[in-house]
Amino acid sequence: MGDFLRAAWAIAAKDVLLEFRSRTAFVSALVFTALVLAIFNFARDPTAVSAMDLAPGILWITFTFAAMLGLNRAFALERENRALDGLLLSPASRTAIYLGKVVANLVFVGSVEAIALPLFALFFNVPVLPVLGPLVLVIALATLGFVAVGTLMSSMAVNTRLAELMLPVLLLPFLVPPVTSAVQITSRLFAGRPFSEVTAWLRLLVAYDIIFVAACVIFFESTIEE
Amino acid sequence: MTPIESAERALRRSAVWILVGLLLLAGVYVRALVFTPAEVTQGLAQKIFYIHAPSAWVAFLAFGIVGIASVVYLFLKDPRLDLFAASSAEVGMVFTTEVLITGPIWGKTIWGTWWTWDARLTLTLFLWFVMLAYLILRSAVHDPAQRARYSAVLGILGALLVPFIHVSVYLFRTLHPLPVVLKPGRPTLPGAMLVTLVGSFLVFTGFFAALLSYRYAMARLADARALAAAERDDA
Picture (cartoon, chains in turn brown, yellow):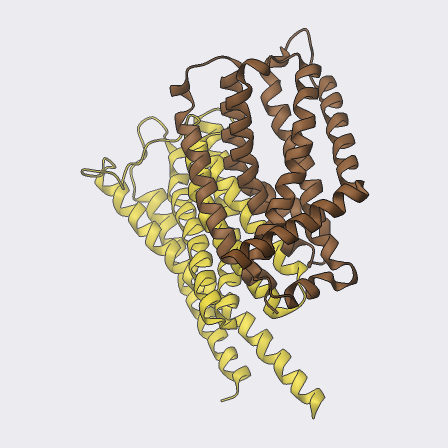
């Protein structure tokens, strides 16, 4: 178990360090996020639709699209110089590789979200601070779910003929349950609705995380078998 | 008998079953249009029910088969299971498309709108998207073993996803009529309509099985021919 966690940690640390030094994907994801948030402002008629009605949906569409940029990178990196073969030859188990990649992706997506959230509050004049605790929890739960599935899908997508273009086709249907729940919970949080209104959605979100994290851990091995 | 000959024989046998299925399908239409009473409020528009509901059942059955064949494939690694799952996905895609075409036609007359984000409609749409992703993924991977593993993983995850989408869309409101057959207590569908519907379900399931075995035989034949060609090149 110790070796397993150390291997997973080493892989995550390697990816995070690589991104920290180059900052290419991170900067482009941030600029992308800021641009999407700014452009969404022109997608509504401010005299007819209040920002609050659209805000939760905008927040989550921005998050998922920004995440897609990072997820595509996770395994594309390992294709250069056939680095994945080196990883597979190392004593790290396949599951440790998957876990390391998931952690690195979570750090990436989490950092983008941490910067995008204040920007979102500023642009759309949404009172994020009063509900910050529950909101962060929902963001964490939904992000865990779609990063777990997204990491698995990107490990397959990079090896197809369509490469980066394949990921959205594979991943977007899988985002329906976590993103729908997250949008529903977020909009009720902003509206100050009682907790009982979100329990069903919260249960769905937690169940999705449990089932899909487990399934992805089990089936990742099958995607990189040689 | 060589593998090519046996695959060709299976293909011919399935073709016969498809013909039988088409005849029975014609029988279902005649029974539904002529010998089944019209529904009181919906009138003739309700006749599409006998195509729509069985197609939906077959669509989900096909996807269930993809999921099960995918799980078994990952254990046994038998390439035939992969071909079977792929055939089921392809034929299922046709039936899912049929649900998505007949649904709006019925919906326009009865609900007054071609499309609505109703729970079951949305679920079927996403089933269609997952099947499409499955078929696109298959077409984008060259190596057969890798293609089989990838599509098995996607098939299993897709089968897990469907119940989740079902719950998510159900938490929105639904416009669909509540179940009239499979529910606690006795079916509320009148006898004559029930007979037509059950007959239609059976015929659609049989027709699906015929198409599936035909598609599967085609895949086996293509494989056997590719293998024979490779052997010839070696010799």
